[in-house]
Image (cartoon, rainbow, N blue to C red):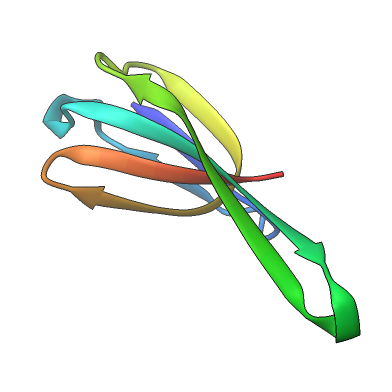
Length: 75
């Protein structure tokens, strides 16, 4: 079972890890730039081949594509 806690909503979502091939971890960071605009920076952290009993917090977004859970963690 993989438990994901959303970034600012205090929502917890549970995903069954039996149907997943792996988990791709990514970070996402917004920062202010000139004139009130934001720049978003994304970076890949790594890949977990055999996910089991994970709990991730500060999850901004996630999706499942072809059996791979892709997670973006807010910094």
